[in-house]
Image (cartoon, rainbow, N blue to C red; front, top):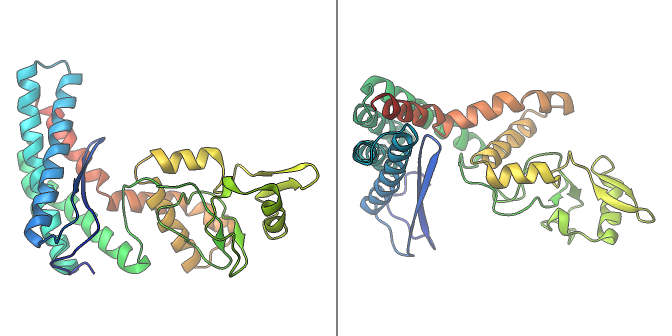
Length: 284
């Protein structure tokens, strides 16, 4: 799929982040060519870079002119990085990594830093992304969860990448009509059906009333994290896949959360974008 040079999505979005800023460009439904994808990536990257550059300068107490100058440099760096990354997605794994490194080189120089360091960070992030996505078949993404946690089919790991996936899962038998239902939308009678197979996550009784454990995917705190912290849900999906793949027990599943999240955020390019943001800040 990554080698596709032209595609026709219902709606295409291009997202780019620099530092803590994230900008998404939405394109109307149409046949998007490789050139269109590059343009979308560059536009999103440029917008994110401009936002990051101007924000850093403004919070540093710089004048409007200096803030706009920093924003211009950030926009150029972001456009380079975003455009090259989008270009590489049309030529498979090698092209994706090489193009990301080339964009990182240009972005590193444009932000006032080093071509070598920018290329290294961007290339490493792309290589990790390609590896994780090829292995798990799930996206490495900064996107937040689009819905609350849902009931999963027994013996499965992920029901939907878009659903909140942090915490202990709640399962239903195969072919159950409750599979895919939002956990917090279940009635007491439905919870009663699921309770025997989910004793650690569905607490209480029908007589006294059921409640969802805070340690489950239906827990309030976990759902807030995946809905509002960029990358948290994608990292959770990757970790759940890895824990299932290696058949880890409960203790090891918990112990592997930090290293798994670290790898996911490295793949998302946090180190690379932090480097660009620091360059912009130090140049003021």
